[in-house]
Length: 227
Image 1 (cartoon, rainbow, N blue to C red):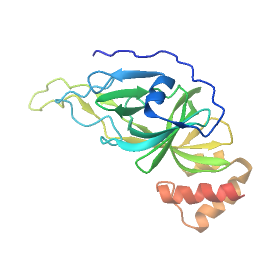
Image 2: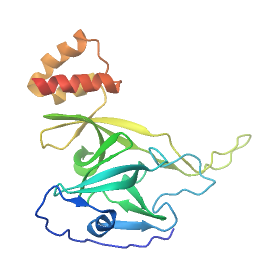
Image 3: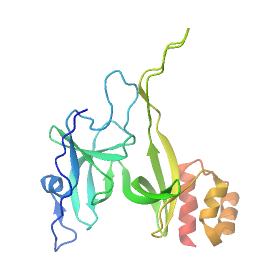
Image 4: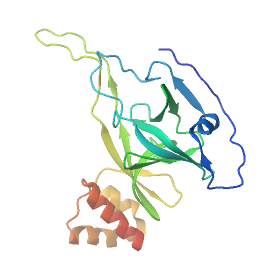
């Protein structure tokens, strides 16, 4: 699949006003980006492939915050959960925004995404997370979609075609400036609260909160942030 690299590592100009408003054209010049020449870049999106690599297929207008706290406004954005990239549209052209560039935060479609460090398989990586709530501890969601190749034909069974899996969501907690850590159950969550774990266990039990529900998790982390 052909891709044209339009930029490698471009240096953002120094700005005197940290709240300066970026125009989309300047934004193109300030990020490490790749033009998506076939509409999908590294994503496989042929008609015969089932499913979608996107959290939402439709682009939503939003804004992007740089690491110097300046903004690019009125950018059409969507999140590719297969490649862990933000994509934005300018006219008829589509671009990837790699999470290891100068982009810090993106707001679009009623969601907030941040590029953060996190622990994965004993290593520290960087990637995009949706932020559900934030204080001294942040409640984060990481979305993943996998690509499954077409299965070999079996007797009496039709093989499954090339396809994207359903989106999976994984919850993380980031405390202070430390890398985010994943949790999968109540015990794992309480361990991340450290010396406040007993207080948090009492709060969860008293209020009959579930770690399987976003609203309940937001209440749990919000309470921790008040301690």
